[in-house]
Length: 518
Image (cartoon, rainbow, N blue to C red):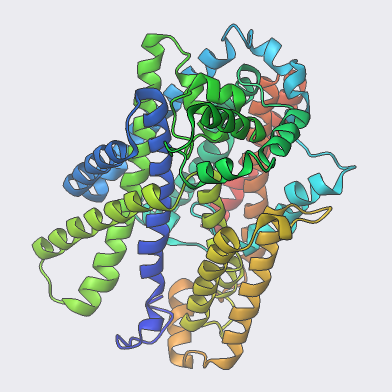
């Protein structure tokens, strides 16, 4: 941002992008990850949300502050290994539970028969449009999401810039995409499928009956009181128990509720199935799985604390407040920023969020419509700092309105569910906002633009055909790996071998073409 705009410290608009990333996105992500820790702590150990937040935040702040970026990188390396080992152990334990009966019984169980297809039902527009068409046609270029950033972003850039050279950076990024998108999901998916057998959701008819009964005039006032405070003790005991049971039956979670009857109703959603499944594993394995979850939590929190603090120190404090600050002073400010980010992240998890889906929706919508700006800024000279700021602010406002203000029922159509409609509406509004901003504000002066293109070489189109080819080859490589692992897991070895051959071939040409570009 500093290099694509004129150096005018008084023009906050020209440099405010890092502060939005540093504070808002990091606090939101820290809050969502801490929410997961709250649910695991409540289900597995019976801990209160406050205890979980305080203990987790203190651990992350202490070792992030002491280790700095190098410490975070090394910790991430070992924590990823521990987290993957624990996830695999959890997967093996879940699949071999007596209720599941092993992998073969799992993949052939009628309860999940409609959930193990890799591709959506192409005869049903309400399924294949939001699950296949929208991501391919719109989402990949229009939506910014941490780790999936069209046009680039600080989330990946921080680690890439710390690599030995550009070749190491690109290779590490390719490995990250393989590990993140192809390897890591499968243990989670299998545990999720097993949980549908162990904790069978209530049938549609049972859920409808529960909803009808809760709408009974004699029950409705008590139910509304319960929804305001899940721990309300002012309900008659016999009525309270009936309302609680009907509520979870309506949500399809009766079996989960029976497994953890003392769990706070605020946090008892379908996303606690994973920690509940963990409680069913043997004691020795249980300890390893818990260690892996702690490693995954600390790794994510530490990354965001370090990333956010580095933005605030380098792009705000040193640039505007203390240009000649010593390293010792900057370190103290960085520790303070780390503490503040952890505090606000924990506060968000305790006050605003109550389920993982809500957190994901806010994150996704906060970047909806901004992706095109980040892609086009490398090529379209008229895009300036004001354009990016307008896109980010409008996306944030729309995410809050769509998640917390607009009721889900008024957006749903016969073909598109409310989540897809929220995404498309937000993309349209944000796109209009930044396009208007492009044409009503002045572009940067020609000298600044030439310096930027000279630095980034983004006006050199001679390598673009091979660069685009690398993009698609990389996508084919990663997703072929994903499907190959999945086919082997689903006991379809022929398809597994076929997709593995495609992955190896695409990977070979990805590396070959990448060497020619670099």
